[in-house]
Length: 449
Figure 1 (cartoon, helix red, strand yellow):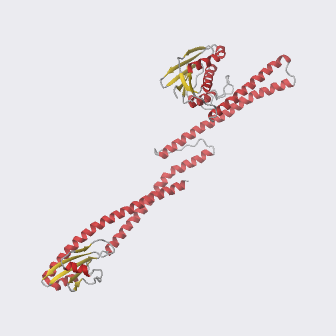
Figure 2: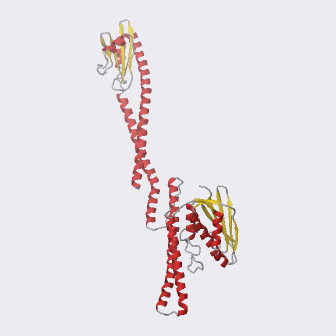
Figure 3: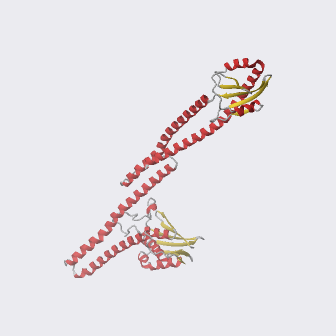
């Protein structure tokens, strides 16, 4: 592909230079032809007037001697009277191209001229009269040598320009394509799984922007790959722990190693571990459906304040167990969103506010009407989110508490589900966390279609 770009750019530039030089050559030639013929015409007329004056003063012998001296000068001179050719310059070619009509017109007193460079000879015919009769003086410049020399000069100039232009094109195009070659090689390295490659392109043009975008992409892919590895490790542990416990308790029950008084407790533990596995698979399936846009989506206008209050009441037993203080202050608010999906948002956010709170802590829920949208703030005291983790908490499989020995059950999927649902409803979510004080989730939702 790079060779193709290199060839195409070189060919395009070469064609541009070639066309430009040819057009310039044509324009210059036409301009030169006009200027050249004008100068030649004035010079020939002056020469002709001098010859006529000489002939009138010295006769045919004087003009003949003068014409003998013109042999090195690039002119062919012909003198006609009513009977035909009187004299001409030595070595002058035959004059069949001068028609009898043209000669007669000049003898009768008309000036005849043919001063266009072309297949016909250039000439000027001047009439004059002496005591012996009427005459026609024709002067023809010999321009073949001059024109051929000029054409050679222009042709050499054209070839030099094309050669220099082509050389510069090949050099500049190579410098232009070189960063693309580096980006291509870096892309191949990335395809092999090297997420630590970095392009050092300092230019500020489109190629430099492409390199910056590539570096940003590599960084994001590296982060995603690291989260994937963390997720595989964490989920493997989350699956393995309950499965190991279920297997051990099932073997104990099967082999009768458990007293009858403890059997019910073992069955309850097996049920709890099974429920844990079920919740994990449900969250994975839910997130997968949301990201594939396969989840039902039916937005409508409804009362948000009621939904927030009802969801909080439904979780009353959870926050009462932790002896949490609830500060709920929501005015009448309406939003345009999918009510069923938004239930998952508030359930996840409330669950996190309870789970990561301190005993006897506080949860605050505030709502505001901002005109074209509504704003909801859910705050909780207790655990805070480190600043370096905030940009990633809405990513799939990301958990702030990465150790397997955590005391809270989390799969790193809840906030990813929240973020996806809010995005589907054309809303926004952000988080602020102050160490030692509180963590606040800010949700903005539109209130009209």
